[in-house]
Length: 138
Image (cartoon, rainbow, N blue to C red):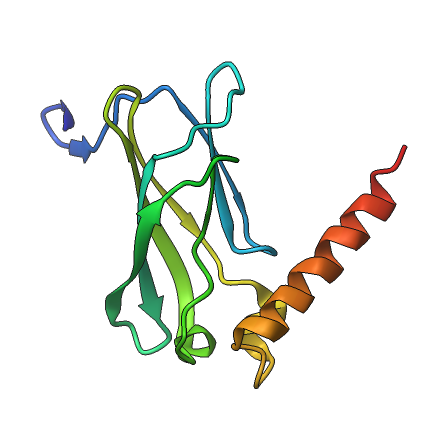
């Protein structure tokens, strides 16, 4: 915790000592974790919470990054995704520190009824990847 105070104002903030480089792809529903040098980090713990549209905050999913340094936070066998307003992540590595990040749910998935099952999600991911590749072929 960091505290800054004056005669009239006090301010508090949380500081996480970290050497993690974290990027979140909202369109794919993935967190990517790398070292400051850019090396993908596997086995980094990610805990995901969801703020629902009614204001409640619930645990959503947790796990570890894969060999590519990625953690998919979207896929679950529930239809809860349509009720989510925002995601929050606690990301921790024993040697490199921890961080807290936030993300919005994928706009195409959260508003489209019936796109919460795994097969449709994988089709959506393939479509996003192919569009990204066509734009970035240069």
